Image 1 (cartoon, rainbow, N blue to C red):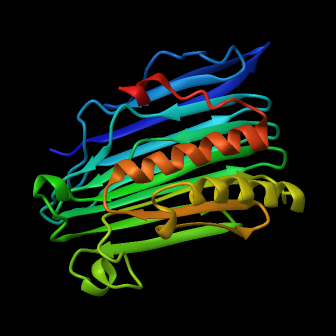
Image 2 (cartoon, rainbow, N blue to C red):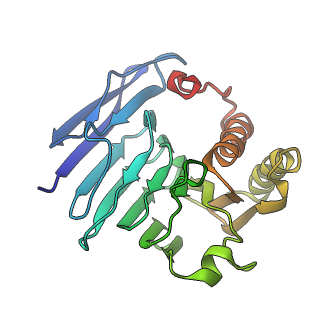
Length: 276
């Protein structure tokens, strides 16, 4: 039996409050809306009750953010891609931001078990005047639990249509990729956090985003395997390699905090479940 689940999440501004409404089909839910920062920013937790995907499973998530609305989405745990007999598992997320909207897309990691056949896709469509902070974290196996990523394939696709595309496949059998100095170099977690604007960022603002990220990197234990760049005038990216998830996630959270302060003049109000 395979699971197919769909979720449509819509953020709208109603007076001073950002309100989230959703429709779902299958085992995919949004928990109660929370307002730890006041009415303007709506925090939600996306829950997939089965806890993971096997071959043939599909999760389809679409999110729209209306003008002036601001949503923050995270998850209570990793998205798990389990072993497959051959059919691929797919998690597909499409977010669309209207003019003046903001979205923070901050799920926990995608955890790839050995022998999985999986693809994780994220597409961000951002209108002029809208902005998004998002991240993507991939963990290959559970090396500290004696469960290495010994076989299987994982495809990662991150796209801002017409602006930026990153797509690659990790094959556990590719020794040069997995352990070569020009590949993962033995690391088993790869992560990125990105700021996306719907129009070209002024040079001063883009440089400020890069400087804020580089200050975090320079003070972090992963400074040797992390870097910040701007591949397009509308995009700023931090990438990092780490042996396991926890230090990579720590770096991403600090960059997110720095960008919130620098780019949006907002304090780093972390979702409460991150402390669990």
